[in-house]
Image (cartoon, rainbow, N blue to C red):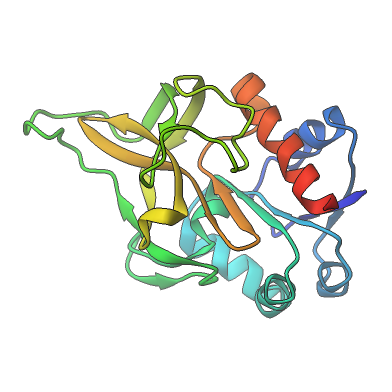
Length: 215
């Protein structure tokens, strides 16, 4: 199948394409609303600030086509900044509206841990994933092939927090707090780490996403 990767000027696009190519998928890199409207599956990657990402999507006329495709049931995978933009709003550099595809907000990771000691932000390191939302394992989710405790590589200063606990698929832990790492709502999935840079876990998510799209 062909996966449409949305280019709005803020992403490591080659790395995303490499991850999907590794799993046998053809990708279409595009900034065209028409291509989004015709997509079999969508990927929204990204690096940088939430405000700039949403401005880039708006300038290209991509916001409503993305929302329309999701409303029709098309699967969408948001990666890093792309995950954050799936949410309703972000507090980064003010308060900015997102795509509203996953109920919840993007908030700053505190500069102190739960004991009040300083902690480094941005958060940059390998961290384990563990089931969230009341789950005891990852069965039945996009992480079905992942063993709890496997590690992913995180680089972020803000956390996307789903409103509904059931929308949290996986957390990591930083400064004694649970930080959402993977979220899903309907046909929309977001991961806070980059698939190609996170080894077997990242590639497993890409593979499972492709399986979901083909059902």
